[in-house]
Image 1 (cartoon, rainbow, N blue to C red):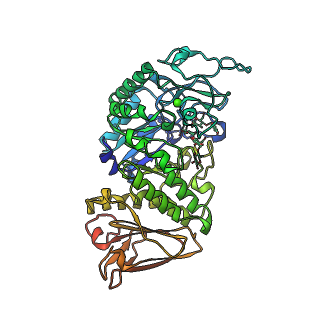
Image 2 (cartoon, protein in one colour):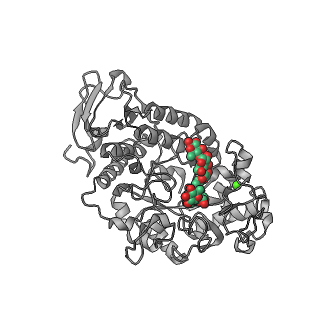
Image 3 (spheres, rainbow, N blue to C red):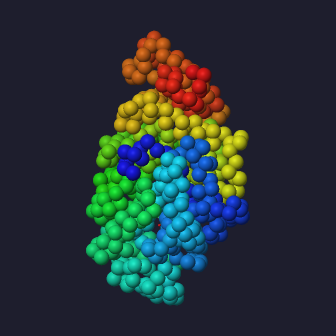
Length: 485
Ligand code: ABC
Ligand code: CA
């Protein structure tokens, strides 16, 4: 599927090992152990309804290839980011038939499959651990790369401001080095290009999340993307738009890390959080990225960062943050477990087993919240044929804890004030969003507000909840959203 196809979708990200077991069991899972807990592809197949019922129509799964086996100094490879043999699958997650079954089960439900892929490195435990340098490895394990000439000379990345260091030195540390593939070597490059082409076709993959994309030279990516032939979104882990921007030329887009940091900071520092940084970062990204921000992956949690609720548990703030990915330009991504209120901090605590929630959706306000947001976005897409190609814009507010985002038919009002605050937003008639006496519905509560005679709007809310306003007219034909409107 193309980038344009993906813009209509919303993505549920799972850590395959931590989502569900195919046999339906619920073993304990101590994240601090950094061990496999048993989740697998069959488990995902069994719980696709759970994902689809929340309104998601795509999933992103952990890397699928065989990883380093046994225990390393950083535990087991349960997350999938330590490839060892890229031509076979990680049997902890299932067989080739299981992965094909997952792909076809998704397609039967009209859903897409996004696979996480690691191209930068492969991993083997060092064979000599007593302070030898450079370290030695059993290269025969690293398939199909074989010998040391497939790798950059060993050095660990020490200076993130030196791009050659970032690309050609190694991630990890001497306890568990991530052997950095020589992506300047044409044999390695050709191997990766044909590997990705084959992986996509063999498992009917619809899109790729490209790990560690900033650790490979930019001009590696255009041919990688064309061999993939599907939507590619790169992980450029950086807070800086200008750094990330060039990668949106080789790949379809990037995970929207710069905005993520702005959103995280704005909502996890009480009312001193800087809301206007969100406006600044999004505007920069809209200006600098190829295709603006329409193809970015928009997220507020993932496997590498602390969950929102490890920092802030005020449910109004949580709901504000969770609203963000669904109402801006990018493709929304929800990291599994956020809907269940999970609170894990940094890696590895943020990789809790979802089965421990029992997949229960009753009395789960955040599940309801996500469901509504997905439904609202679908309604926005069908009501306004230019929704997906109209840039989000910001209407400046006098309160520094208020943010107003317009992306018609959405007008989203966010606040970092929290549940004991009252917030107010005002939209001048000169913003040109509405005509006089128009009725707008907050799809999160189904409450209505009416514009003034000049199309201006003034809204206040107690309890610090977000508001996603849509013209009543935009809801009239929607089956489920505030259906009495
Ligand atoms: C293991 C342990 C952890 C331990 C870590 C050092 O080693 O489990 O407890 O803290 C996988 C596993 C991890 C494992 C690692 C290493 O492998 O999931 O559990 O951690 O063995 C991707 C994946 C990630 C995966 C890998 C490796 C890569 O999403 O899950 O990790 O395939 C760098 C990479 C990035 C990578 C990330 C983990 O590390 O660039 O691709 N993620 C700065 C750098 C970033 C760097 C980041 C973290 O620090 O610029 O490049 O990411 O080290 C912003 C700045 C940024 C700054 C951030 C922190 O702040 O603008 O520049 O990022 O404001
Ligand atoms: Ca590299």
